[in-house]
Length: 187
Image (cartoon, rainbow, N blue to C red; front, side, top):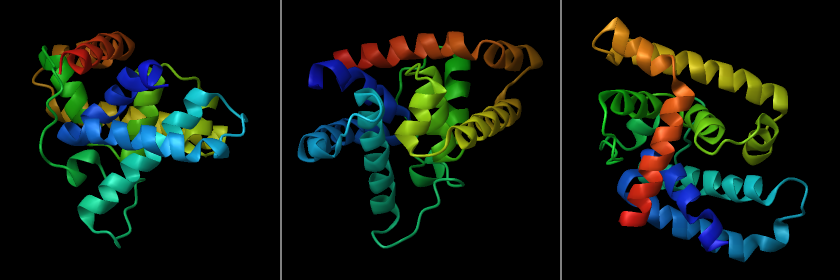
């Protein structure tokens, strides 16, 4: 399990939790081991493990805010919860724009987009991971793309930079998957 999901979970946490990513990966594996009897095979194991990771991320953010505080992951962004910029190795300005834009949309929307593009999950898998109906997920993905585009429009220095970033989201996701995977292996 560790060898199969370490890089994927690190990538999942890296842009949302920065320096706490490795701790969250470990907490996720521990929670999986402790709760394996709750996996009933209703969806893929991958969906289940990312569901556990998402719950760990939510716990992490709640602890950062206040243990007893209510955090609405439908509106709060990763940037608001952890304003220290992520140290993801974004070599190009477009990567930086995309990563920062992702950190400025609500966490649940950021997670949905990242599972779709970074982890290449199907919509059904993402819905299962997040514990929401498929129709709700489709609406959230649409909204996430809209908010991402709005944020990128605010940050891009030129129309061509905006177009190159927006126009090839899947290409950027593929490149970032490689960057984050490489930085996970290298330290």
